[in-house]
Amino acid sequence: MIPAIESIRDEIPDMCISIDTMKAEVAARAIEAGADMINDISSLSDPNMERVILDYGTPVCLMHMQGIPENMQNNPNYVDVVGEVRDELFTSVKRLLDLGVNAKKIIVDPGIGFGKNLEHNLELLSAGRKVVPFDDISLMWGVSRKSIFMQLLGREDTNERLAGTLGVAASSINKGVDILRVHDVKEHTDLFKTMNSLADK
Image 1: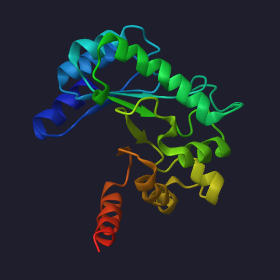
Image 2 (image 1 turned 135 degrees about the vertical axis):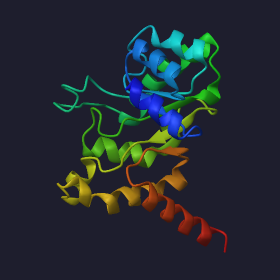
Image 3 (image 1 turned 90 degrees about the vertical axis):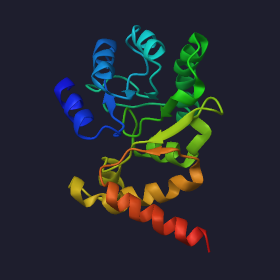
Image 4 (image 1 turned 90 degrees about the horizontal axis):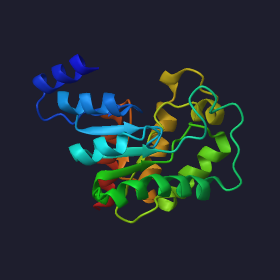
């Protein structure tokens, strides 16, 4: 990843680059190479990640995941998925806040598709900011082209999941979502330009 980050940084100096990693060493090297943000799907499973975030002052996204990628979809089970996701995110976020990390540099992601079945995913999307443990924390959704649309719409081909993805994106406006992680940037830009134009009338 380091040569790729360095190349992007040289080519597009103002580009915001996020490094997806669960490993503190990788995060540190990526930041030194020019990355601006850490996306940690394990929510601080590496105990050294806290120190990297604190030392570099880098924004971080903490995602909820039940289990690990190798087994997370075997049999996801919750009594109250919204409450349990919020509680686990609370624990991770509080670890950073207690170290003095600025709340405005912390983002949470409910982890759609990571250790959740279709019903869990729909409940989390409907809940919106109810999963966010503190007021100043930002909320990110990463739903683009995911298997939720195969289950919901029967779209096995990921290239046929744009309509469903845009539907979720449109609903995000009323759910207090701050950041969307997407593949189809142009289409999402068009969606929000259109919706904003209608809202201004």
